[in-house]
Image (cartoon, rainbow, N blue to C red; front, side):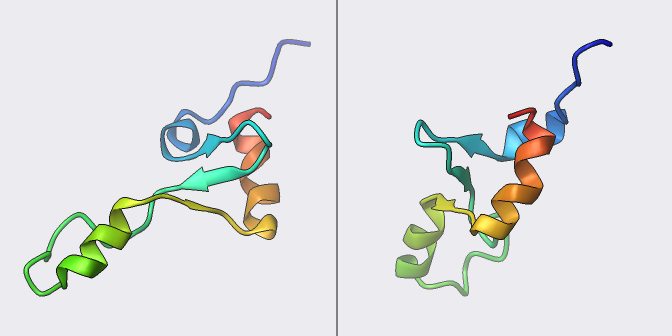
Length: 64
């Protein structure tokens, strides 16, 4: 049986930390930025950790 391929689109969007948590980027930072406050745009720059339920769903796609 060959190895399972990971979903490349998921690998580009999500990263697994050293402790095993899955991180993601925040949505809402691509366009229509003029009406968004600078503080909000700064917060959107930072990544965040996914919820445990979403991590369980995403981890198989990453091949982890």
